[in-house]
Length: 204
Image 1 (cartoon, one colour):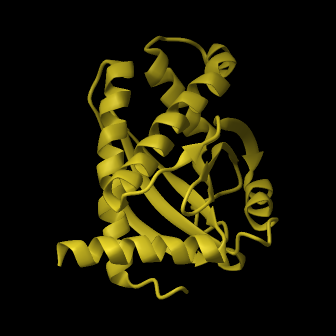
Image 2: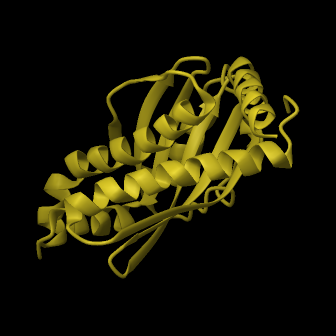
């Protein structure tokens, strides 16, 4: 798979952990409390091999924030939480005792903001460390079933690879897990590996 080794994956995990730290600082300013975000693992697989287990998708519904990035490599990034977790995050971000019905009114705007913070922090960390520039689209939020999400991830044959970041998010004492998925073309994955090799060569 474009010679992506454990060393590459370890480097990506370190890079995204730096981005997660940046995102946590930004979120802590919004919620007025301590926020921790970590990226315990990164994996790259063929999109055909992705399934509900890979992304910890159960039979419920999920909030998905998607955003497009372009530069030395192009990618669609999708941030996934269960809808229940998404509403709890919105509650933490709003800092109020709203009902679920009231929170749902702010769900789209708040989740787009959350996705924008996490996605841009992770990608900007990668761009800074690997020395390239990325452009991004505005985030989009939708709620969908596990089957709908899997179909969406697999429908573009031009993006045969998926990079999956497992995310741990803790706001105050509430712990949430999610996934950040990058859809990559063969060329984009190859270009990413080239930049990681250049980075590893510069620190060895």
